[in-house]
Image (cartoon, rainbow, N blue to C red; front, side, top):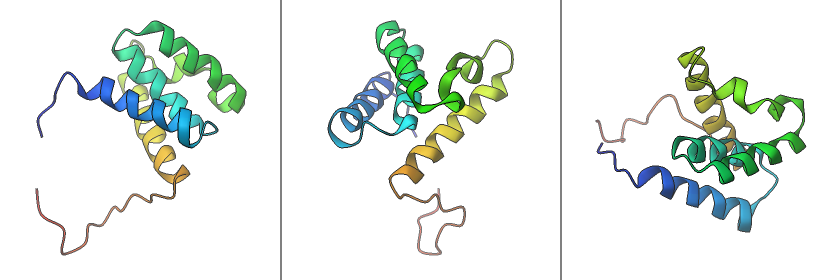
Amino acid sequence: MRYSATDRPRARAALELIRDHIDPGVAWVFELIAFLACMDGVQEASLAAIERLKDFGPEFADWASRWSTSSNPALMTGSLVRATVGLCLSFGIQPNPKPSADAPSA
């Protein structure tokens, strides 16, 4: 899989579309917007998403401690996995740990 410098901004734009037009009540959308905006140095978008997360309760209130790479890189990785799975489950998409026999191999 090739990585492109436009992947993160495009992913954030897709999440913002979900936030603005599909469902503004999914905390994981804001969690991932904050992460992607932070990675790209878009402080205004990151801070706005982090502020909005506080409305979802104490579980989401301390964004910086869950996403900081300075103290424990594994913590950020876990937060990314948790947010991605949470987002999928919020929209009824269940990750399948066992691919079907018909799935193409990598």
